Length: 139
Image (tube, rainbow, N blue to C red; front, side, top):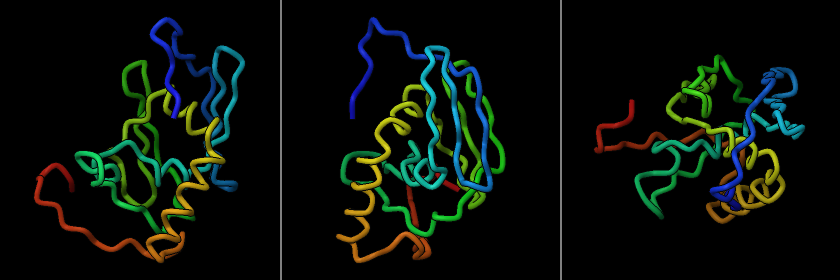
């Protein structure tokens, strides 16, 4: 995944719209970029410890998120948002550059996600297995 250089400021959002029917989050930025991100993609790539784990190799493959929606979105400073998804997940903080990246790279991210599902013998609609965490940072 690419990253912005230190000298290039991240674009700021000018509009953010949740389209519940189509399952998309649409964001317009002040540099004229516009992305439509599937909510399912946001959920399976949530930048949270619940999804990413606490280090490389600790990721939890997300399943059963095809019909997940967004209940609410809370701003986090001037740098991002914290959505609450309809499955109760609310611990991911999505920065503006990360959301832009999800929108721009969604084709390769989808391919990677579907490849990981196939490798695990799972599909997008399979319910999540309940995992137990002993780190004490999840609810």
